[in-house]
Length: 177
Image 1 (cartoon, helix red, strand yellow):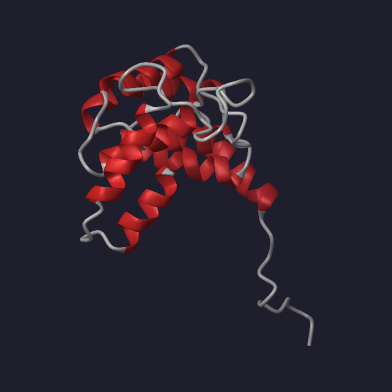
Image 2: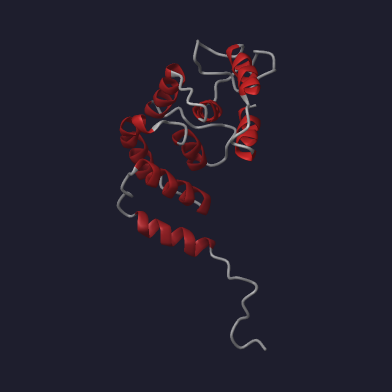
């Protein structure tokens, strides 16, 4: 639901989406744990296992979507900060922890950056990126939050790129005529 709303906003940022936003918020309130969040992952499903979980990445996308219209929910923000602090931020629905971190951190307003900066720096230091996707997400996260890259990050960067480098098939190798 939040991704559809974001897509409509990105397609036409000047359009009046107030009716859609109102419907979105009404739908959310029917699926919240507490007023202001967090919200159940699966809207429209019976609130029974496994359809009654509260996924941090899904909730961060809801927060990011609402933030596009300057709506910030304190409870939702606190839920995400608590998930980061308690190391319960991982999502079973996303295969890359760094993609999950990126999606979570993009949902915070800059006023919260100082609070999450230390948490994210610790996660990146303890759990270095393992793939090009992880690496790209880590660079975006550290840039956005203005976090210095941890020691040894450059070595990890070169190792990942060297292991994942595929020569351009359009470039003819020397010696082949």
